[in-house]
Image 1 (spheres, rainbow, N blue to C red):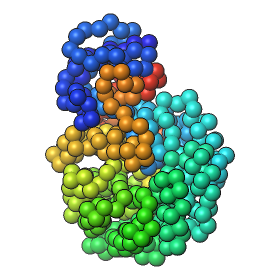
Image 2: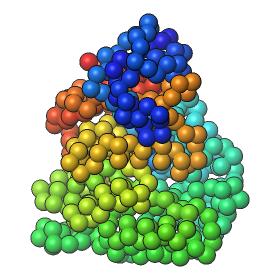
Image 3: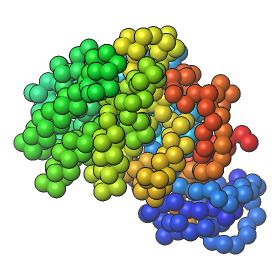
Image 4: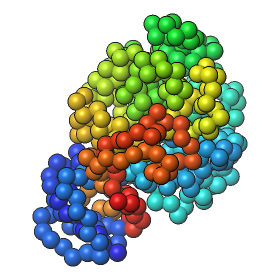
Length: 421
């Protein structure tokens, strides 16, 4: 099969064609020509005004399989990811059972084998993600676990945190931690501040995140190893991580798209679709996160895709479950930040940097490279509703709204997804 993409703008800082308008010919899953010439192909896509980027990669998504397949499963998650431009997704271990055995890794890899989107399972650091007893991490690594994390549960046990960082050095493994001191956030439902006080909701102080980051940085300085902070949310966290990087620690971090877009003011209407963990913070935190992205302190932007069933969200705010869908709305969400963040400033954060953090082979737009690419129409308007939503769940504040910006096509080798016109 051959595909000709005409007059597309390349958005890939690693490519010699970055920001150039070119014609791209793809044959049998390989980029064979990038120039301004016309080429014959089985299929032609008129792409004037569109971006061609490396295939997107997500560092934090929950596909709920096994155990919660009514929310999402591997097949629906992969279909959703492909339609959202993602050729690679690292999945959280918070399933039932928790991903903590070789057979669990094999199940995920087997079930996703024929999908366009490559699935990279992350395994739990501790049994049942309870933070108490270590899993067999070497066995899990050999089975294909890409990184180790307790996912939505923070590593609260200091000794286990230390031992994990030491143990993972045997194979240069990556430890990912959600920085949160649970003793400070118990019973909390949103960010602690003026808004939570006015709404009468129990707050979750940003201090809980700062204390955990400080603790982990001290442990890392002592033990060595590689550590990644998942889903940071505050200005102080950016400051702490920036300083640690300057001091030479092997540290990386990510932020969710939700924390770049929204603040705790979104909670004023008690819409449980804005209830997430960590909670939406103040605008000064949001501004600091954007600045951290621009100066390189923050390495990646994640979807934090967290499907929930309707019964878990259609409750009083303080009783509703945490989580927002994030994959299918990632591109329109990023494009909506155009006055604060240029596409050239965020494209690496959802393509090359996540792959580099996991030490995966780089992906770029160049001749003779595998066609691992995403085509984005930044002006396309579409309605996010029952017809277009590809998730099994609907827990998104954007559901029912018109969005601007959509993935037109996703290619991973000879596998291709094209959005219906």
